[in-house]
Length: 335
Length: 273
Image (tube, rainbow over all chains, first blue to last red; front, side, top):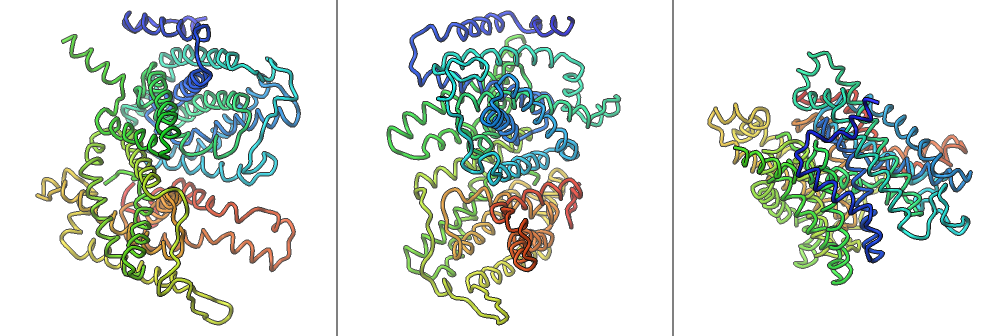
């Protein structure tokens, strides 16, 4: 009970934040009632997916300060588990999602144990390496369709199929991912005030002090890594049902890992709202830039050039992200 | 310097394009484009450092990693915009397509041999620079302890710029060598970045001879699929033939990186913990 009360307790934020967040949350709930194009809807779903990815990354990367650039492997594990189980054995999403989560967490424990002996840059590159190894294996593994990947054919089922998550209209997908979004948000709100959350922030600030306080640093990191993994894996499973066609290149490439980290960092790593702000800015920017510049003007790559410039400017001049700017101005006002 | 440069492979890619385009536009043999590539690489490194990386160094690790990743995306897509996405390769040149038959079925392509010799030469050059000159000592000192070096009167900012320039120059030279036998497109970078990380991790961070020997080891690791094919052929084992080893060629580099980092984070010759 205490935990549930804690999860819904936002009282340590200023009231203005809560009003804004509540209004935006309500707007998200009623968004499908407004007139919108299918492109806008797809962008909104992408935004929610990446918010949840970012929230997952935020636990280990934001609160824990361990830069993890290998999250895409868990997207892959989640997506492939759901797709394989649905195609081969007709097991619905709501059963395969926890299985995928379990597999991801298991894998995260296996590689997390050696990984967390490393620090800083070396840890980050090692996570990339594990992610790429897994991607290479999936690209040659015949059971999961090798490099061509798997396709869920929607014809076999009669949409709307709430068990297998096969829908014709995007609205259903929107509400499913919105549900995960709110679950993730409340979980994270509990997490940041939990024992593990405090331990992690201590580790981020000074690992030696954390150890001297009796925190089992290695184990705390591994646990948090598993939590982050679970978040990512759930959305990975959702991705399989939503996109219906998954390949290693789509789901497990390095770009996805970086994008996940970028969401959280742009918004402000280590804050509750950071990943949501980051995804809310980056995802629409990305898809509309691609739509206007890449496709319309026929200039391949220019959208990503602009995108890269934004990344570079943010990381060079405001590494604490947009939330960092907000907090800085607030502190200045108070003075 | 303690910063990981994800754009390293992109520097190499630009070196490959420099070599290729100089050879094609001026008609010079590809082997003699190396000075051009070195100059371009040096300027690239200096510009990247003083225009961008300098600001990154003030921030936390997350910002550094994502910043150089942004640089990588920027260079990659800029070259996609300029050069287009198709594969390009050299078709002319003194050495292209020639090879030495060493007997016993050993055939060495002349381009690769030239690349090997010139790589050794540039290794010797960098090693001499790092170990036999005052500048090299200053560079090492800056990398080991920036603040201490500044107290000793070393212009650390200039040394960092120089380090990036040298790094850029060596990697573009490598690119101009590789383009003799490897076709180039804007996406080749990441593979080479990972190879470079594996080499440096194995050799030890900050060690030039370490990088040299580790380069040999990683080269051998990359030939595991060839050895596998040979063993399959020799033993005639069916299960070995079915295993898709050649598709997993580059996976061994990532595995090697992971294992080295976990087992011996210091590398073979490294001085840094």
